[in-house]
Length: 495
Image (tube, rainbow, N blue to C red; front, side):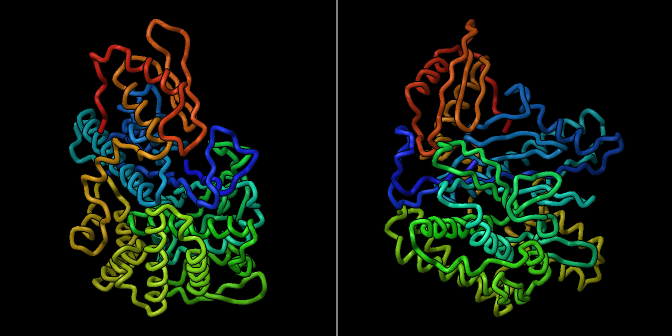
């Protein structure tokens, strides 16, 4: 559940929420729905059954399939058979991507545990539980990877449609994860499943941005921006670029509400959905799409305009960014420009080191040259995203054909440790402490509650400010109650 910190002083802001002038501070997060399948089974075990078994240890710990983890993230079993993991609030893109990688590690552990349990129950040692970090299944259903941002109320939906949608539509040239559809290769898995640009719909149609207005912060100041157009990325570098470039574009849009002009409105598209479908079918990034003003530009050209605007933004506001975010932004712009040059030059091989769709495309092209058919190509497509039986992506990393970014130790640590500078730190500390007890407890994005033993009164602490890592007196009282309980029979972690 990500949020954006207000960057200007406002009399509407709750006194408990600190506000920084032109700081452009932001909290980031990623929600990932995972696909599940079972192979080698002869006992009628389907994806729903396997997902339920995956969550048995979660239920034993939390008495629910909807819970929060020690790193402050949310773990739950969504409608259908899709386990979902929503990263805790992170103050830098690097932390958000690391938390997402921790989610992969956690899900893989749950899948391995479920596989062992199902093998024991059925006596079938050939049974395998697969968990896919992708966006489509073999039946053509789509599930999402969602980015959430909170923007100030001064940023209108109309402004987002004109300035942000063209960016989302064209960024798939480096943020797409690729998909095999019959004999066709698409650079984005989600491109054919989006029906609208901005709306409140989620089931009957899918917009690029969902207007779900659940700020999880001061609703007088913030609007929730729920971006559902993106692909799930295995590459942490692609994941990082997806969020970092979006952050810079949102910063420019916010600056625009204060009178600055970066020319983003001139990039409005005539038909964003159609443009995205066209761009997704061009591995060269050269096909042109029509803009609202009648001009035609390629995805590379559109992204280059955003990149140049980001350079201008940094020349004006570099000192307004936190040092660590400023460093990330500078690295992002450098990689952004280099990536567009490589795409324009057709140097896909260099991009295969971190762009998911390129890595997958090169693998499939090589196999097709050796005689593989479309069925085998689709198998490779799915295997690339299998985090439980990871034979493809891990091989790319092992052979240094994919940048890993994080060490295994960093990822394992992030499974149990929340960022220290956001609300997630308090939530994670609460979850860690309360799991050592037999007490009833609950948590969500903005509160934690506990019912002490031999007491029917529930204690609740509200945490409205996502940048407050400490909590207030209410939170301190809850933690004192938790730590005063008997912990002689702790519940062991499931990972």
